[in-house]
Amino acid sequence: MGLISPEPLSLTMRRAAPLDFQDFLYRLNVVPIAIPSLRERAADIPILVEYFIARFGKKMGKEFQAIEKRTLKILQEYDWPGNVRELQNVIERAVTLSDSEVFTVDEAWLKRGPSEDRNSSQMQCYMSWRWYSACL
Image (cartoon, rainbow, N blue to C red):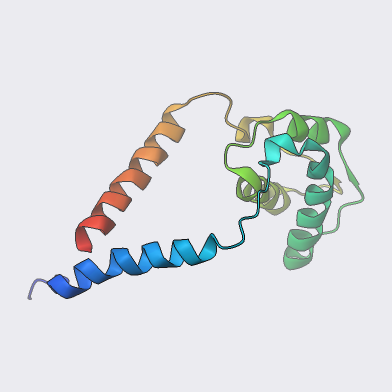
């Protein structure tokens, strides 16, 4: 059995990739659009929750008759450091695990304050970025 390893990138490719990416970012910045974070748009949360429930409910063949009021309150009071993507993941998990016609979210799924899990995932992301950068 042989050892499989990625082929090293040429020096030309290493230098070209970051410049191309910078050029891409520059082009995206032609018309900047400021979108406030989800924590600043708590009034949008019920609309997003209904949308995600319908989307994932249809995908999984589930239909909900109501959303628990306490669940909406919890979701609106949460800071959403992961923004809409985090809300989407929480709703998808709740729809997947639900066996009721009333939609609820387990408050334990929402991380409150700094935690080991969050720090660990940040470190993993940083290490992945470092590995990716070293490949360029």
